Length: 153
Length: 435
Image 1 (cartoon, each protein chain N blue to C red):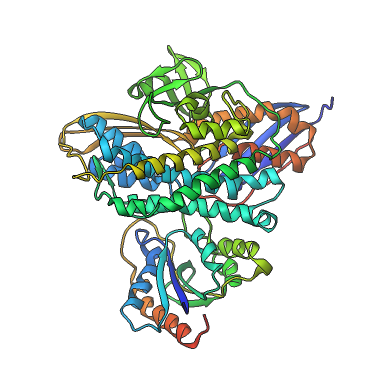
Image 2: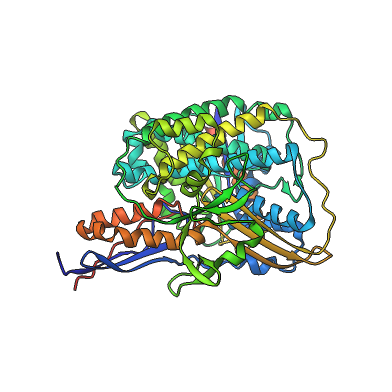
């Protein structure tokens, strides 16, 4: 397998589901061969996937202003740029990567890049994205494709 | 003996689900005050259920918690079915039991390996523990994943399952879909047994407290959704009589209600529900091979040391895997995925055994199925006073320890209960006031 693209987030929590929308946009495009698309509701499952050495692109929402921007992060940048985790339980992305490093021989885990869409804090449960998040979905999908095609993942 | 007074103050409890803090005021070796303060904002689920259709109640209440949504689904369904006079039996009943097995496995595994084991081994967190005990952390994550797989298959997804409804399920799995899980379930049973032997080597503080244990009890099985409410001091009631024996109160320092037992109008005091209560009251209903696993590590009822709850959780993980294997092996797909539930006005009651303990639901609705009133009492509310009582009795030990060690021991005592306040984060901060 060449790479994994993994969406995180909850579609029933409004813009927190933006990663899933990016995944849907990617499925409608021609992807490079041997790329797996999947959705994880719990970042804890990342720990075993990081052990496989297959490069991973994570797609998720991050709380930041202004909303609707697409940002690309390395895992070590995540803690400083994401002031509050969006998941409801289990490990967050930073914790999952940290735990995978602690469990691996020599701290060696799969390369990870994060493509995130900035969002405002969701105020209620509900399906559907805000206008800013919707507009950012194709931009984020294009960024993911660019990473896949240049093997930067 | 020192006349020093000091305060153990923990502003933010870590490795628990939710937001809470702890204050213990010591005068010499006696605790003059213990406050487990929950400052998680109240979320008013009971209020906004009013006016909704009863069919929405399972999906709404499952959002109360991301760790134990199945418990809320089961409790709400059973309470609604009680009001409607609906009985769910046969394969549908077995599927509900299997779904609950999945939740117990994932919840207990997460707690044992990532939240509580670090306390016993002297690590601040699972990440530090993973460097020396990586194989156990990996095993714990794989156990959790096995539980997640059961919930995902039966519930439609791992978090906030969507396949559960009044009367059963929206879709029942095929025999082959369930059968595909068997290899991992069998691995899980063996792994749980090995983990039990490992955790049995931990150093457990010597501590016992005489407390009334309360749990569901069923004549034929280790309890999940059905049975009578019993206690170690003679309580034996139908779940419909819960409100006559348990009352909720609010402490000024906590946003969460907490529960006491009452009897004949008088205060009967605190009680304890959850794994230790189930183990002590329902040991004979554990599957024989699981009883043997417990005996092998010297764990038999009555066990009154709350620090050994981590062992009991692993016994329950083994029980859940063994039960799941039996259900999958004997499963016959039902012709209908749910039992029809004609609407009628009524009030229904249920108690089910969430991973952390008793979860009580009461619903009243009119003849259109519109909810008029709802009451939901989660296990952590019910155990709050017991946690404080443990800390009161631990006071002489805490007073004798240096501050950092006292803080650790106090937090470990809180984590014995795996409290679900909702959304685990950062740790306790201890403040000492010496006078």
